[in-house]
Image (cartoon, rainbow, N blue to C red; front, top):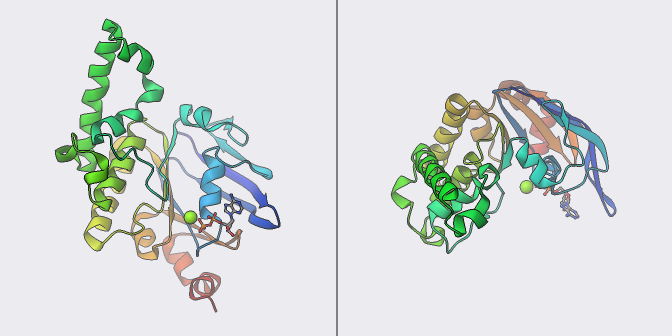
Length: 252
Ligand code: ADP
Ligand code: MG
């Protein structure tokens, strides 16, 4: 398994340094959280890791490959999958079809072949749909497979998004605020799925999260950002006690 290594990552927008020489390592098989107040640079970091934003300087390496300037589809092909802070699903399509989109990179015949109903493509499609049903069961959305995503509760939609990312069979999963906007029950359900994904599917997880309690329960290691700078790093217990972290969160 491979580690994700982020070194001296800097991202500047016009007149603003969103990330300032940030570094951390996600060890294989671990859950690493990046936390920090609003505007700290968490989503920017994700957007660089997934190829959506370009780093101004610094580097991102994963399993021997330099991802720093790769386009999103090549990063995905290396086994890095992500979810978004705001839901990015197709509301009118069914849960099954949305999760199926995650299989795209694994489909040899592609959607064109499937559309033409070529025998090979049809067999492949059947195999992928079986896997989609397994993943739906894993995240607990089996009963909604045929429902249009827009009809479902927010908590279920977020789990469908996770299912779509898992459908890519990733080695590294990037989760951007997976429990934001959820109620207590939805948070617990999501936390269980995240823990199970790491344990059962052999993947490393980078979790960006605002909810400290969630991070304390889930993360092996934590990196804390504030105004684009790394202000602390360590185990959840270590960072929770850090005066810099307390100050950043209380805004004093
Ligand atoms: P977080 O996810 O930690 O809340 P973000 O990474 O979204 O923080 O934002 C960090 C800073 O970068 C903020 O000041 C934000 O306004 C700025 N920022 C983020 N994306 C852009 C962009 N595309 N253009 C300009 N500024 C941006
Ligand atoms: Mg954000």
